[in-house]
Image 1 (cartoon, one colour):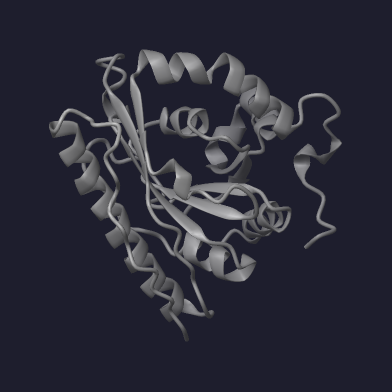
Image 2: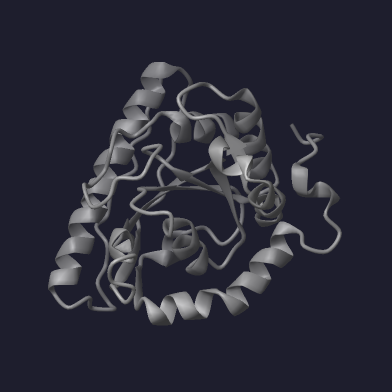
Length: 234
């Protein structure tokens, strides 16, 4: 894995790290201000080393919002369809994104994800595979748990709230809530399924917290719920 060549290895100027640094200066401040983004639990993200951010998916804007609140470059596993557009296909790799074929086991995408983590990076995955506009969480796929097990990387659950309303109400308040890191021990479909169920339960806890905090006036010092790390084994 360590010798795998990534698409962005040949970039001399706009590497993912430099692209993210530029975006954090130019794009992140307007997003955080204009949309009044509230962040809870960001200190739970490890400051170094491999991490999988496992998030729900309400809107196309989730990509930009999650990136805007991060303090480390974020590599996304993005659906293959986005790469069909020539301009997008040339741009996305500069952000560290790589394609994945949905609905099937994509070995190339899995290898790319493991390489990101082997290099100590952060991998972003939308765990229910497609957008759910204001309808909560869809079925949590096993991909995040499987990659976490293979790469020995923790999963940090993330609940993004409010992005589904941005098109109709651009100044809609948005919140991003981070849960406690969870680990996946062992291999096999039963392990991945159990870990995915735990991840889904944690995400729903974060959803409930975020909605309650919104109703309470979005207090900055609100603390997301604890979730005991449950290690699953074969």
